[in-house]
Each structure stands twice: as C-alpha cells, then as structure tokens.
Amino acid sequence: MSLPKVVSTAKTVKISGLYRDFLFTFLTLLFLSSLLAYQSAFAFSSSYKEAVTHEVGYAHLQRHINFSHAQMAFENQDYAYSAKLLSSLAEQGHMQAQYLLATQYDTGLGVKRNTASSFYWYKKAARAGIGAAQHNLAVAYAQGSGTQQDLIKAITWWKRAANKGHTDSQFNLGIIYATGKGIVEPDMKQALKWWRMAAINGDAAAQFNLGALYANGLGSTPAKTCEAVHWLQRSEKNGFEQAHNALTQMKGSVDLSKCK
Image 1 (cartoon, rainbow, N blue to C red):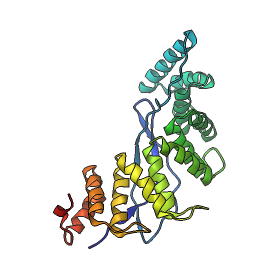
Image 2 (cartoon, rainbow, N blue to C red):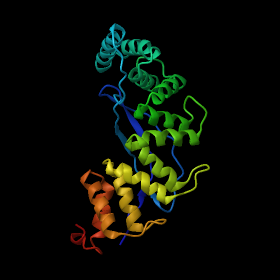
Image 3 (spheres, rainbow, N blue to C red):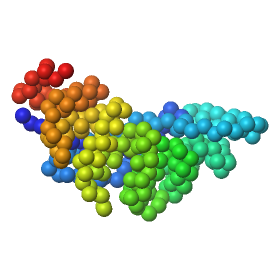
Image 4 (tube, rainbow, N blue to C red):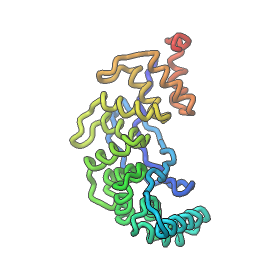
C-alpha cells in the first residue's frame, strides 16, 4: 500500500473585501523533502466583522453610514472612492475600515500598492482583534512584506488568529511545526494539534494531513488505519483530490467498510 504524504504548502488568506476575493502570495516554508507533497491551497474567505464597537450617538451613526458607503463603492469597484472613505474611518479607529483599507494597499486597488501602509493597517486591525487581519499580519512578518522579516512574530500572530478559530492560521502552524523553521524544532504533536483544529473547522487539506499522519504513524502519532480513513474520507467529501487518490490506493490492502 502506498501511504499518503502530507500536504505542505502554506496558506495565504483570501482577503474578503466585501464579498470580493483577492489573493496575495506567501513565503514558501522549508519542507520535509521525503515526506511532504506540494499542493496549491487557498484560504477560505474571512470575515472582518468579528468585533463590534459599542458606541452611541451621531458620530457612531455617521461612521456606520460612511462605512456602508465604502462597502457599496467597493462592491461597485469604485476603489478610489472606497479608499478615500476608508482612510478617514481608519484614522478614526474603525477596525473593519482599517482591515479593508489594508487589503486595498496590499492589492493596489484604488491606491498605489504600498506594503508598508498595508502592514500598518493590518497591525491596527489585528490589535483590535480581527482574526483575518491577525493572519495577514503574520503573513507580512513571514514574508518581510512592509516590515522586517520575523518568523517568531509571525507565529505569535498566527497563534492569536488560530485561537480565535482562523482556519488558515491553524493550518500554517501545522506546517511550521511539522517542518521546523528557524528556531522552531519539528514537533509532530504540535503539528497534529493545529491540523486537527483546522480539520474540525472543515479544512480539506488539514483533514488530508491528519489522515496522512495517522496512516504513516509519524512522530509520536501511532498508526491508526481507521482514524486515517475517517479523515481522508472527510477530505475527499470536501473535494480534495489527493484524498480520493489515497483512499483508492488503500482499498487494495484495507477493508474500508470496517472503518465506520
């Protein structure tokens, strides 16, 4: 039986800027060459409506109206106008505006692309508690995009986002600990922990990786055939082609019907 190999491509976030998705690249991490397979993987759209400021009065109402106008302008691809509205709101501390403005600077929509500005506003929104901003800030630190490269800070922000339930951050932490990077030693227990969290949240690549870990008995993870089949089947159900291929290969030596 040919055992499945873990998917090792780190994930970026699809920036959900008011229902329009934009992709920016992520620093490729060190891979375990004998273990890890390559797979392009894109993150699910992230909501920036994670925190609510409790304000009252005219000023709050006006900010709400202006942000609604910015949303409408963005959806109508009037990016220059949305950036103008968002800039004013971001300066006033509107966290959702800070996050969305960061994505516009990151992608160059309506403004000249500026990684230093995108980093600045990602950091503001991340500190305000927006998980998608925390993830993107971690990516910026990992890449050295708009700031000095710092993997330790990247891991710190990925953990904050991951503990808030951000699936792509959970997945990336799994890669960090599976491969080892910088001062981080390979730790399959930690990789298993973060991939399990992402898998429970429905991430197909993480589900596949859990299946591969159990099938191979990697690190301190004992080989558990039915546990492997369970996660591979969930990954397959989510449309992950490598999971389908792995299950097809396993059928020759494993009675999958026994794994209920």
